[in-house]
Amino acid sequence: MAIKKKRRVSITIDMTPMVDIAFLLLIFYMATTTFKPPEARAVELPQSHSMIELPAKDIINITVTQHDSIYVDWVEIATIEIDGQEVQTTVRVVRTVDKYSVAPEILRARAKNIRALVVIKADRRAPYGTMEDVMTAMQENNLERFLIITDQETE
Image 1 (tube, rainbow, N blue to C red):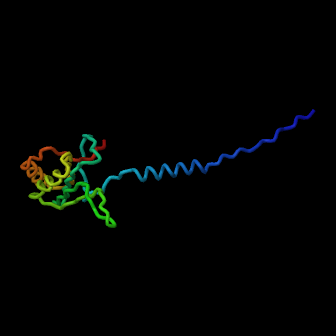
Image 2: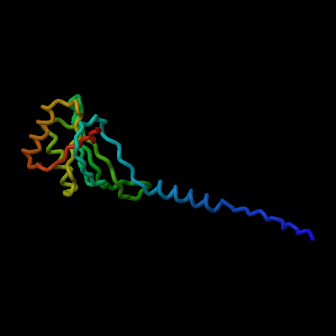
Image 3: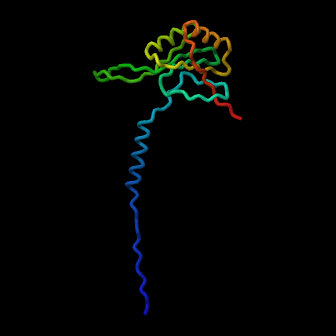
């Protein structure tokens, strides 16, 4: 008696719904992610061993370049008019200052957001005198709490 072999039925899995879900998740994450805002000027930071996480918002950046340029930038909520309707949005404000007007500009930014943390990003080749002038101006205006940003030192 010969045994009849059963015919195998091929199974196919439709991958279309899984691909649709993957693309929907990708679009969702791309739409809801907040990216790092562009810097006023790119600087090469000095290196150190410390590691402190900065908050994602409520920051006033002071950027000191190697050519003695000083920039103060922050993000604030502004009302703009689009097609006759007023809409609230976030706007990045960047101001070029000198060593005499850096503290009043920081105070102006702090008036709009009292919780804002002052962060200094200085180029590693920036002259020490410029940093000293910035810190002295801040100290004279009772702005004594700030962070200096550095890169993580590699071993």
